[in-house]
Image (cartoon, rainbow over all chains, first blue to last red; front, side, top):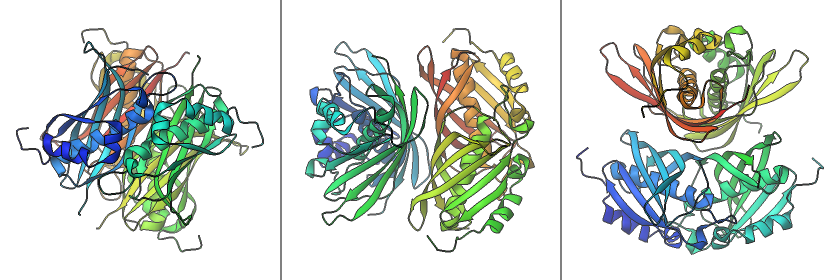
Length: 141
Length: 141
Length: 141
Length: 141
């Protein structure tokens, strides 16, 4: 897909910078193109649960936001997540989270997107910790 | 259901106090009994998105954690969320979030739970903003 | 809720009679009112899987159709299921399936619905075998 | 992945032949290998709904069964679907359905699988009509 993304990486960064909750989490934008988006979340003590692994709520946040950003690269910046489902595979920790989402298919108004969320260790090794599928709608503003 | 919950409200508070991410969000425990649990999240600027409404990631966190706490009142404190699905109904803001989750059915090892998440205004009026269904498993530790 | 359902039980029966796949399954309409609908599926050998229990595909059908019928009692007969999630609790068989679905909340165009699917034995005893949550949209025709 | 599938195409055919509901639907096994499985459902009037398009319950069946078969190629033939979510993209009809499912990741006891379901026209052109994600568990028998 050589089309120009409707939201570029630098526009995605600006959107995240305007989301107070994303700032609280500390999200960064990774590779973004037409139909896909990557988010990166440096892991720190604040994002863990009592067992020392990443809190499921952080993974859910990463799913929700990466699904919407991937959809936004096709539908434009004004999108809302209608819903998603997430399956957790294993508990883990690491240097950072990487959430990669891509659009499976879309109409002019909605996109079906999928996301995979990995913990990445300091040595670069990865473990898949969750996978999500969601439906995103373009909204008029 | 007159049975004693396997996790009481004060034990739930202790678990939340040991979850750094839950402290970052600022969650409080509401009413807890056998088969159900309520979480309360005071809303503040940090939990919003760019449109001034509660961030979907906060709602996802509230779903994930309330589902697990409701399951824990039957399965005990050592539980993990296998997965859940969430549908968003409307965007909203308010004084605080209220997430009420209850167990629909369970075996000795797993529970099917559902959660409803409301924004509550300062005058007490509520709006349902999301609903979730999930599967929670007891884990050996 | 004392409002008149947008689809009555007899209209639901007519819709089912026009769905060839529903005739193949052999579905009957149970109690229907504003915001809820019940389907009944007599169990026979054709609806089982290799272990002698009801096939998951029959439960999925029952979820899909009951969610849509419940939504139709508010949104009217022209609805489409956008998606749903289903959790299976146990394998079972019985005299018939009972799928009870109700609308959790709705706007003028969409409804969030939940369904519970039970096997019912000849003596009337029931076992919950699956639960579903879905999003249904009104469509213009 | 060059590993030998734990369930081959001919074993998958035998399993389907032993599932009365799969015979009622008329499912055929397509390409099967380690970590993936394809099902094919010739479309006929019995599988449609009142608008002349494939009934959502048939798509749900195709999702459920393809997810389980893909998991079975790694976990072995004794598996149960714990749950899945499905999103519908468009209504369609065609010569047959093709459901392709693959394992995203797995442990020794569970697999996370995804499925895409296409209508295929007589001229071979395809339309994606639904996508699903599910969790499958190995069961002891």
